Length: 350
Image (cartoon, helix red, strand yellow):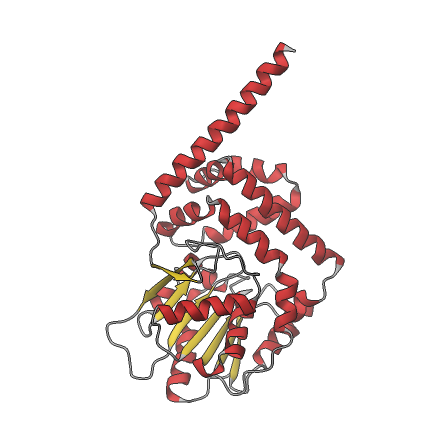
């Protein structure tokens, strides 16, 4: 009995140590990694927006707005935003609950996300018209923005965007994927509060692979595969950005928000499935080379949203084209910006 009490006491002490470790680390992160942009209040909570622009902007040049993937932050555009800022005003932002933005009580579906983005851009005095750039789930958001505020949008770039059909009617496997993703995020929330996520990410930042692999294996092979893929993509970011990524994902609210975005994915797809086309709006669709044959038709279908479009296959990229081949994304944005400014056609598909 005495042995059991000793073990239980040590376990409680370990948990308390983890909580203290997390609290101290969070306070240090808040001092070392403040928001790189501005925090602007929208409906009682703050959203983070980061703006860049060249010294001289050609007359009529639209503003570029970058919309990240489902659980990604503005940091995911670190290889793209500074390059776009050489020829256009460009803003990235963190959706509610991600990055440096506060959580929102509203559902995490495109209608609510777009209302928040619209209010944010208005309060930040971001000039219109806009060229919207959406990666993955961000494609849902920019398409809904163009539907809701068509007079504000002059062009669009879809970066390996998700088609509505992919998540509208779920297969049994997709249901398991979403349930697994939500559970994984909620477990991450719990572990984050205990300092475990901070410990693992600190080890990752220093180049260690032992602790992260052990953590992934504790939750099964699918979790190990998922975490391994995320880690490999994050390491493609500029080295100076990695401490910020670590600081962001050591916050429990980011894990909680990821769960809400994933849970709402089928509802988001259902909304986007009802949207019409983009008429003759300049559009470039960038697709990674990883898609199975049955998904290529969906990527081509996205290019058919506009009569003024092109489809570019990023042959050296997978899903995160803006990390694998950022120059392709920058060039696509430049082409759409110029087509919108000069009222011309985009080039042929490649």
